[in-house]
Length: 165
Image 1 (cartoon, rainbow, N blue to C red):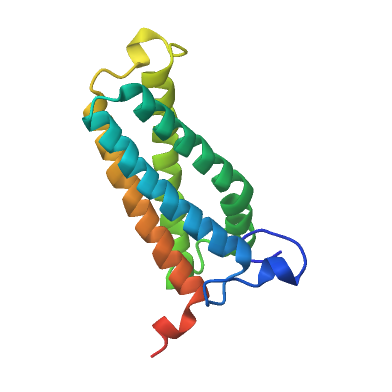
Image 2 (cartoon, one colour):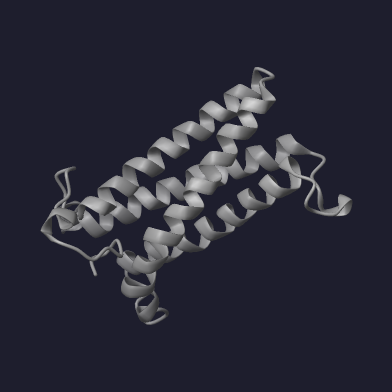
């Protein structure tokens, strides 16, 4: 398995962004950036009062991100990082990936909670959200922090010349 948790031929291992990353890691990076931009566009829809489109936009992105995490990120983390925790946490390679995974997990769980609590009647009344703006804005900020940590992780893993002394 490569660092992105993908088995396969050399085609899947050759990235297209000019780094040492496999193609799957390049695709995930671009997809995550697109999802981050999509969340900003979704927030703009809410500011314009287009709440139905906002709900669809944000829901699709949160669910797509959940799939990317489950299919690509968790397997990669389990193979390349988890076996070396806590012994190697002092190294940027492992620390960045662990921070990204921890904050990203919390952010995704809160995003899924918002989806259920604000967008459905699945949860009991006492668990539903009443102050939408605070929750959604907070998760948007967290999402972008996680995205920046993901960019730092990608850079550390696949652009090693940036970190040479």
